[in-house]
Image (tube, rainbow, N blue to C red; front, side, top):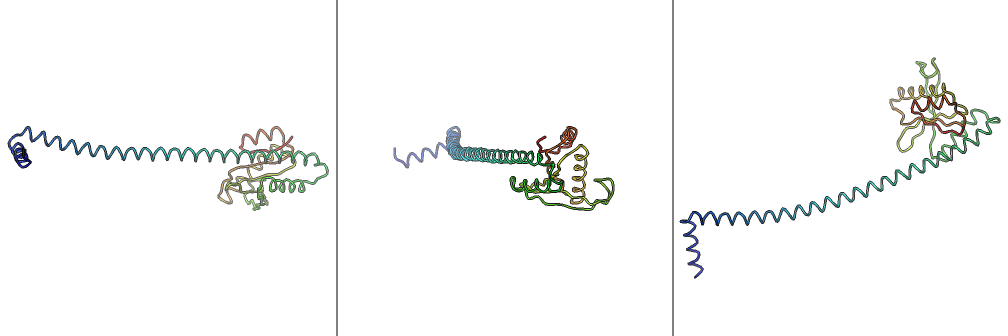
Length: 209
């Protein structure tokens, strides 16, 4: 059958045979749907591959972050262990050392062993928050990993010293508008009640009793 004659018959069927017309239309529509499905499936496969790669990158990034945090924590722990050993040695020589000399020695130790840049912050406590009457107040401060740390260095710490240090921290916050991220007391001797008070008030202690 000639192509021209075949076309003529098909056109005639499309005009006169409703069932044939719908069948042809359905086949044409199905083919288009299948083509679109194939195209979308390829896009979905590519998206799935990209998502898997992103997830793998994120997991690897989290692993590196955890490893860095773990190493930082280990370095800090080793540093404070070393500080505690030095505190113990300094404490044993307390009988021939003045209080101020003792404090300066420990401040130097913190800077040398932990890399803390310890600075003295002074202010006038008009309201008597710290001592109960207007007075000059000083606090040792340092910044570590963008965290503000207040440090109290003393040869012997009692429970009253813990409460006084907490009041100093409150005064600092009121004067500067910045809340310290951490409070630390460094001492070779601390009373049991002082340890209990420090734990209750969220103050870290580094000592060898």
